[in-house]
Length: 310
Image (cartoon, rainbow, N blue to C red):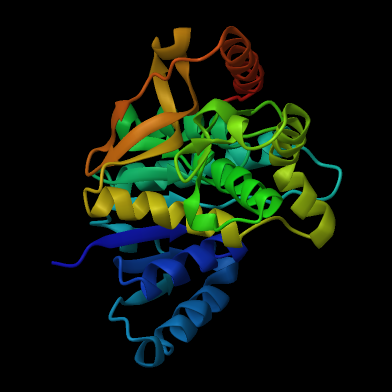
């Protein structure tokens, strides 16, 4: 029996995610958006389907506004919400997007009660918390796409700086998906060699700051809308690990119960992803400064969560 993934939100992020999942033959895909956008959503799904003979995939795509069609989904990816505009922070989106995510999560609870939920809507750590509260699903089955994207940006900047293959660069970014995220140079490597051995501290700090501002940089360049190519690729990496039991070690927004001295919140940490969602949270040894930065990031997340009215 084929796997099934529902993507809620047929905007740039959602549609590109659906396309990548289908082209990779990961699963059949249901693309859901509001009734006012049903025909465009159906059109996008049909257009993707018509590329199947050319690209050689067998995944079936369905566009709809009917949440009932998500029944039987192994994973539900939530991308619904408004995108950032120049000058906006992710936190500026909270009032609107928390309401949207609450509504979507209520539908997921009814129609896809056995699914794993991957949150993409910003502010990521807060909307993941909202989805968890509203669905009532076990905490390991609700997680957020954040660290995979942030780490990919850090990896990209490192590779460009050193003029090396992207394939040889690995990086780790923890914390909230915002300007207080915590890139970890000591756990970031090129061919297994820590970057602290390959570049000076000033260069590393410049790349760290660019990573923290990575989403905003794209928002300002686009002028209208936000990133979607790298976010969609990040989702697919998570979906792949879950559906095919890869147990990849990836930084994701997961619910903490005391790890890193934090609890009762979602924040980016390294986790093993498998069929049950978050199979295990890995506690890295952090320096005092890194741990302090992680706690500061957590404090910012908690402050924003406190503003949410469920």
